[in-house]
Structure formats: structure tokens, C-alpha cells
Length: 113
Image (cartoon, rainbow, N blue to C red):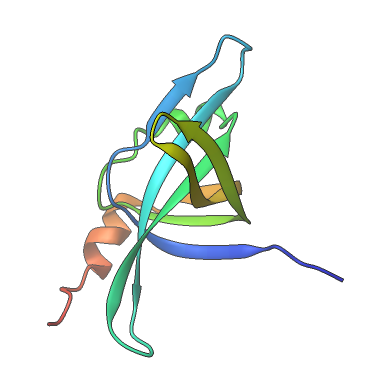
């Protein structure tokens, strides 16, 4: 049996981008930073796409630095440009939840060098 499931918790690297399409669908694009300590300390920025986000989620107006939880699956998209064929690996979210901003501030810790 195959399984494509990913759950991440991190912070928004930028304000979300919301796009409306002629078909009536909408898309929220997020960049989520995730800190890792093992095997070496690093920060990854992970692109996340959520199709047809709920109006409640869009109405929250999430800001850069706010904590976010994402559950979804990994997908590799391909497209063509004048320079050739390109691809991107991203998370297609099934669920997105923003944490309370006040809790974020109380929990914030500086990144050690």
C-alpha cells in the first residue's frame, strides 16, 4: 500500500497569495518555514497550495511569522516555458490551521546560530 501524507508545523514566510479563477475556483498559496535541528540545523521554506479555502480561513488575514499547521500530500507539478520544462514540489493541503497570534508571540524563540 502506498501512502502520501505529510503534516508540517511552521511559520508563514510571507503573506498568503489568494487567486480567483474564471472557473469559480480559488487557491491560497503559502510559503511555510520549518526549522530542523537534525541532522544539522537548517530552515526549509516549503510551498503549500490550498484549493478553495474556506471564507473563515481567508478572513483571518494571516501575516508573516504567524504559526500554521498543514496536513496534505506531496505533489510534483510540471509546466512548460520558453526556457523548457520546469517542475516544483509542493504540498497540496487538505487542512490548514493558523494558530493564535498571541500564543505565537509568547512562544517565540530566537534561532541560535
